[in-house]
Length: 213
Image (cartoon, rainbow, N blue to C red; front, side, top):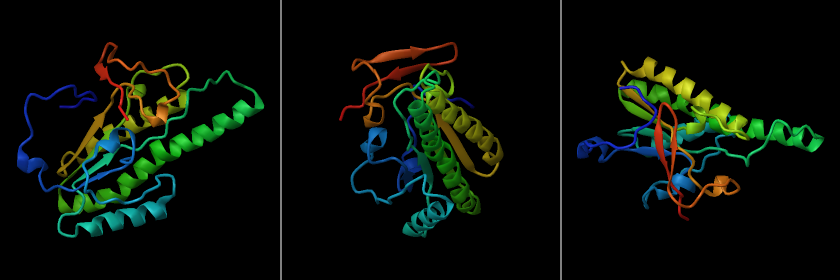
């Protein structure tokens, strides 16, 4: 079944489906990723560092587990700049807008897609694997002040939905998750209420929670 929003599953995954699997999670040092269990192998990675650096990281990750390789690639890292408006046409505002555009797309789009393309051949060779993409509701329903971030998430959604159709017959799954706002250190400047809120539109209902630090 194709869908962006998974609210709750009544069926528990079989233990053998998740046990002894290798999970590679980007952005695991903070935000949602900080809830990764202790004892995991840490592989420093800068998604904006370019193709050569990312290729080296993929080869290193695969070498950590020569018998199995990476089973799940979880794209959790993201760049989120405080809200800005296209109406700010001052010289300082224009410079800031360009820097924000480049930084956001380098991490959220180019880095994520490049890492996927470099890892995919290993999964294809094994005949199994899974890409999980932590996208955003901003990639479905834009909000004022988030044009650049929203555009990056629309790009991710388009790419990975297409990738799913290409890989579904190859034993490789693709899951796109689009949560609503979650208050982390990345968006500390944004106004997200501490209480649980509900974001709703015609196509989805997503629970919004504060990420306690």
